[in-house]
Length: 171
Image 1 (cartoon, rainbow, N blue to C red):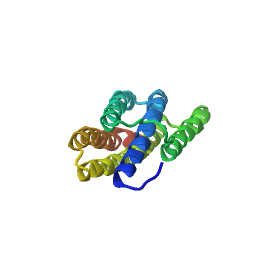
Image 2 (cartoon, helix red, strand yellow; image 1 turned 90 degrees about the vertical axis):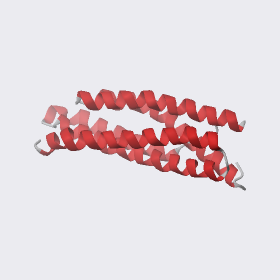
Image 3 (cartoon, rainbow, N blue to C red; image 1 turned 90 degrees about the horizontal axis):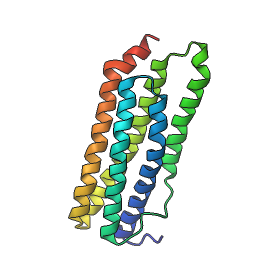
């Protein structure tokens, strides 16, 4: 795709987010299954439901633009997910050797927050582009997702500080 205008860049960034969200729909159930703490597993399942809603919102934006959401592969999300899969794989090999489940959960939170921060940056960018381009309906939809991504990050921080990291520290 030629990136000659801000509108072109906007569509390219939206496609990146769309692919990132699609990848996350596949990864979150695995993270929930790997979580030992019930609240953390629930947080991943809740975010999966929200992620599916994010995909639908992006599809709505693409419909309004008259564009296809396909055509971009988000390599950053691939890398972030690959790192979390590495943590889960390593932990599954170690659990028979006195590995502490709280340490895995703390690691899962760290990886999930990296993912959230990537999404927050992406949605913040496309919200700014939508505003600049006068695409107020897009801005409103994307802003809802941005707020949900920030809330997910905040809830992970709270879960880490109040429970998971405390348990991992005494492991």
